[in-house]
Image 1 (cartoon, one colour):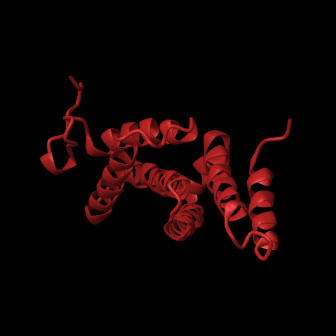
Image 2 (spheres, rainbow, N blue to C red; image 1 turned 60 degrees about the vertical axis):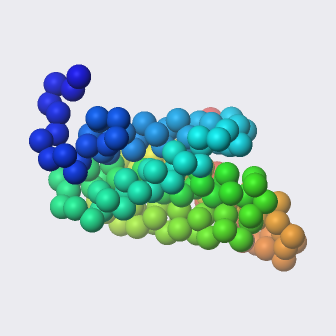
Amino acid sequence: KLLFPPTDQSQVSPEGLPRLLGAELRQAAAQLTVAAGHGTAPWARPLLVAVLGDCEALQAEPADLDTEIRLRPLLFRTLASLGTLTGANGDHITAEGLFRSAVDSTEQAMQHPLAAGRLATGRGRLWRSLVYSGFAELLAEGRRAEQRASEISKLRDIATDLLPEG
């Protein structure tokens, strides 16, 4: 039981958790599954798609500042995980679109002063790096990798620059 359950039922996930927390937990489980190379698990894609649905629902409603800040990385991490999963299943065109959306979402998050502050350190830097490195790897595996070498290199450089020294 939650100490302070949400009073607005539109903010409650199917699991009975606040919608944002439920989305964050589903996203973390699915992202770890994809990162561990088990994206073929039958529940990975549905979890990520459900998180995108939660993000859409939460964006459509007035949100407090904390929700808005937490929603931004949730969205780009989910898009990147779906891009990785989709690319691993052989649909590189759709995967590229998902990664482009993840990069756009990352850049939009960095425009918000408070979100940018959180994303400029610690996990935020790692999350952003994973978006760029995942996109670079997808492009490197594609048919036109040679023609896209400069784009791949730029994405890898951004990813590397985001990682801490040492």
